[in-house]
Amino acid sequence: MDCDFISLATPGVQGLQPYVPGKPADELERELGLRQVVKLASNENPLGPSPVALAAAQQALGSLHLYPDASGYRLKTALQRVHGLAPEQLTLGNGSNDVLELLARAFIRPGDEVIYSEYAFLVYPIVTQASGATAVVTPARNWGHDLAAMQAAITERTRLIFIANPNNPTGTWLSETELTAFLDAVPASVIVVLDEAYTEYVQAPGFPDGLALLARYPNLVVTRTFSKAWGLAGLRCGYAAADPVITDLLNRVRQPFNVAGPSLAAAEAVLEDHDYLARTIATNSAGMAQLEQGFRGLGLDYIPSVGNFICVDLGRPAGPLYQQLLQLGIILRPVGNYRMPNHLRVSIGLDVENARCLQGLAEVLSA
Ligand SMILES: *Cc1c(COP(=O)(O)O)cnc(C)c1O
Image (cartoon, rainbow, N blue to C red; front, side, top):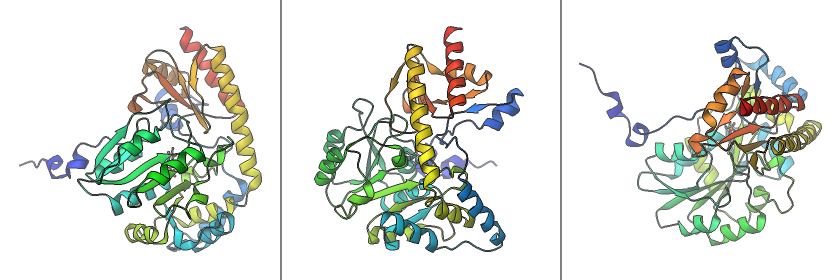
């Protein structure tokens, strides 16, 4: 007799849709027998890894037979030196996705409410639903977070609020004035998770540094990652910075060896690679300008972005065009699952990659 395993799963997991990542380049190469695929779909750093990080990871390979340092002492010390964060404020994660999940595990249960915005990062609905909590999704304003609506949505059941600044996939951002006015109004018992995965890219005046706000707001949790500007997506390392008591709770549910040794070593080393970060930001600014100009030339609207990606409006359902671009060896990111059916998200690449993307768009739009 067969068992209906679905019915055994928790109610939240039963209805869960898995996260759909960007299509891997080698998968497309296998499927279509193509070479030289351009993937601008996962907001990865187009420069490749920092040589400094690579050397540190390689050196750490000699200790592969050992468990990594469960406390992450050296990386935490480096973060303390760079950002002034105490080790008691830091939770290291297997990517920042890991700490987002630890937050859900530690703080939300069925019946609780979690607030996030329309067009917010899909990991927030996933961790919310998996915990059996109730998602309260506030409408966006100009594609960004409407903090007044988020504030109005707070009830006595609200446990967590997720805010990405800048937001993925829209690239919109909140100023320090807007954010602090919101944080001033949030009850102390509601934890605000400020996801700063793309903070290193932002040069807009008035853009806040969440880490500098921690002292003022004990209910604030800031998450950061080494996956984007720091170019270490494949090694999976991120962290949360928060009040020591919140941090202690997160570390109770964290698996002891959740970050691998080479990842810890590479993350520690890359924090010193100022040249890599500067090249990353310069490449991104130039690539963003190149894509914006190209989109305008094609008569396409786009959502102005401060991240390392930009959503372009194709003015018609993007799905078929996404498929046609795949045939040309160009992988962009559909955002229909964010309820943005006419947009594609383009990660900023190298000059030649951006040019191929624009050329491909011109081709499929005129077909
Ligand atoms: C990419 C991204 C992350 C980082 O994920 P990692 O697990 O650290 O690789 C976090 N939040 C947002 C909004 C992102 O887009």
